[in-house]
Image (cartoon, rainbow, N blue to C red):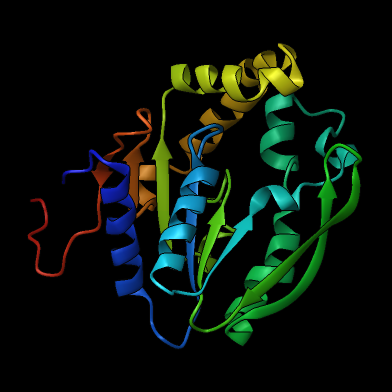
Length: 232
């Protein structure tokens, strides 16, 4: 399927997501990929696309559900294990947001999230999710078994390690110094390898986009249309 233009991709995704959504239930879209794959940016772009179409839309950032530092840096675990197993409070994400959406067809309220720099729960987010809302849940590790029952549709952004390191150099080194490159090499990328071995995107994601070239993303997996012949 062609996919050589971001505007084309955004409209194609928005069309498909809206077609899939039932009118009386929030539709939760998981936008995921390894670090620097473009999850946050794609979420922002889809948010803007839906807003232009007058569709109610809400972004949920997994990064808002970080554990405090004492839990994230649990002694006795390797750095990759700390990142994969301990960084994010998936239980809180489910209990306070995803499960209420499923049980009550929406969620309205304010939550306090962790300020990573201060390591205090002082960041306030407002959530307003109704039966007609498209919910864009973005973050790493969203194929985890405890999250999957709450996600209606998965978009996976694929990038290679060279792209990750180049993007980390541009995005993270200016604010975090060269030490962050060591973390990518020894912590983040090994954690992602373990995770993806356990949760292969090709078997879980509905859409996979090669996002190495930001201006020309390539769709490499797309849901079959009804009536399409399956491979023998």
